[in-house]
Image (cartoon, rainbow, N blue to C red; front, side, top):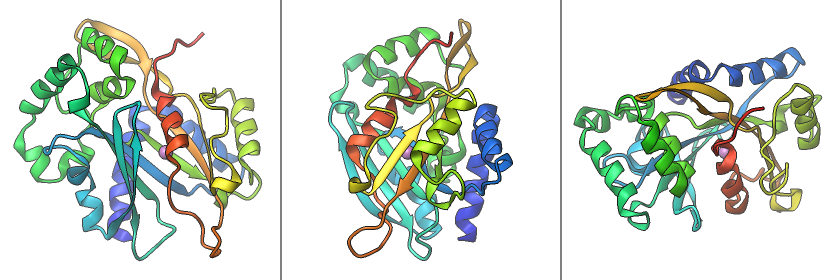
Length: 270
Ligand code: NI
């Protein structure tokens, strides 16, 4: 667990540095008297052999994680895998998705081909990729806008690169806020906007997993053309239920995850 913990600490520092609002969410739970444990983190990438799921998962595999399940998101042209720590089932899970480039327009493929060709080999070889963030320099707003029309996922990846897209509060370990309804109410009372795509709560106790998320915070990001307000990252909340064998379900529900992806979709804050 120690090796994995080091990786998570490093990713967490980047996550709260990029988006201080997620630390505010974390602190809210702590001030309310809760202990926050992490259900899972998520990364995004494309299915190019230089940066695909295999490359991004390497550090976790080296730290004792193993592949546990995979998921298809047809409409979003995504494929994902989830990993768990063999020796310690309660350790945070790792969820890594990749965009299937061959299913996208030639314009989008062209953008990522250019970006990947300028990626230094040292980044992918040394497994540094996981901590690299945006590796291709200041983004262009015009490209961001263009990508967004085809895939919000690709636009997010273009601006933020390789870093945690979200962390997830495990509701199972909360004492007072012990249901997803209570957690959602608590977030709304504190001024956070929930992602309501597919309803505030994705999944049911019967599915063995209930999830909700806040919409990504809006931040001012520097583009070549100047600063623009766009979504950054978000926080997710998950409650797991025991399966028929009495073991806490460890997987994901593709139908729910499909909607959670939309937490980083562009929106304007009033
Ligand atoms: Ni998630």
